[in-house]
Image 1 (cartoon, rainbow, N blue to C red):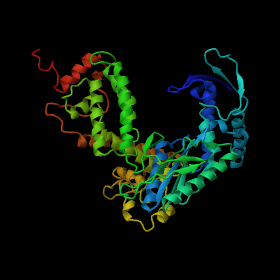
Image 2: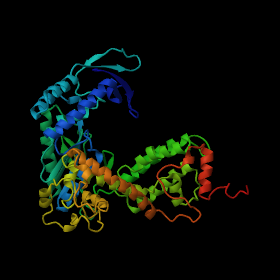
Image 3: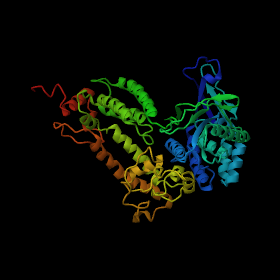
Image 4: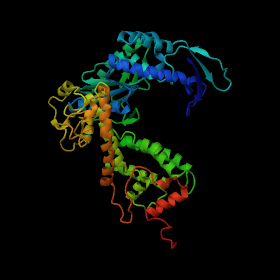
Length: 537
């Protein structure tokens, strides 16, 4: 149960393979052991939430706290500080060898002091001790050797143990924020000038570095990145002043990739979506080789590949960012080319008919659906389970009324009223003038405009446990949310040709399971763009 195999793989692109840093070890654990570790992780996560062992600024390794919640909280706080006329900067830190530095005894003491049951602490301490591993590569002796390095890689409980281990490293910054996603830590400060936030970043980094020495946690300075945030209307000179950390000069970056999101000093979305477009094009160039125009995989399989491998890359970040007009035009052009691959439709096929043949909506409808889904998750989630919910305006109805109201009032004192929502059921908002989470949640106001306070008022909820009510509320609102996709599809899609009588649907057509050539001919004839349609027979 404590033995593992380590597969040694070389890292592509390394100039020299004579050093251990040029290789990556993939650890394969016992299946039964991973099942038990998953059960322990669920129990430990529940105990950590109830006992308050998790810092409110910790994300990742927990159910319902993903990359979107982390980046949304970060950008929301940045805009909040900018609305209060602060100069904002952020430093992205990476824990050096994070999981390898976890001390079993210190972690056990932390859990015991926090009130975790003795049997669960003993189970975790036993899990981290007396482990063995053998490296598998050509010519290696297949002998197990003892290892005493932190938490094992690939274990379902390892990320959660690391999150609990570094919980004390989170600082209280006023005004500012220290937020982390597993081993990725950020320090955000707001001051009145560039020299002052440089000194503040150096000061807070010194504190977190000093606290990390007690846990044998160090930060990789070469992998540290820096951004000086600016508003789109800021006309002051762009600062390139470096920050000196451990005798190294760090210059601010113009684009930083963090948790899959490309962040720029003005929080503009075009950089992110253009990078995702490049990745989607590279993926599509590889996948389309599996099926030519008249042979290969069926249209049904091709559509599954488009939906899972292409659309997931292209739409990553749609829940938080909105593409501008020029970027949306490029995304639509690529999306039309992708949809022609499973349908075999010609380039002259009308886009509205192409969407219906592929049973996939336009990019603009997908973007809006992603944002509304993310907003619905925020509105329906309890604040103790999703800290991002506490950042939204008090006028937004949520599961509870837990808010950081004092922080909002303090930071926005004297600022323009246009920077935050004043009415939940008011008109559409401008994302450039309102706080990000407020404008995001406003997009689902039409779904719950008849429900003043969540959860849904229903007699069926009386017999449910209190923890289940938010999930039932979310599932009840998911049905009208999916139905709204069709309404937005019909509103944003170009007019359908008079010769095309078929409606829109999100399920593939029944004939897509036929051979590739036959299915393509059917698509072409349905769109009245086929050589066979003009044939006498």
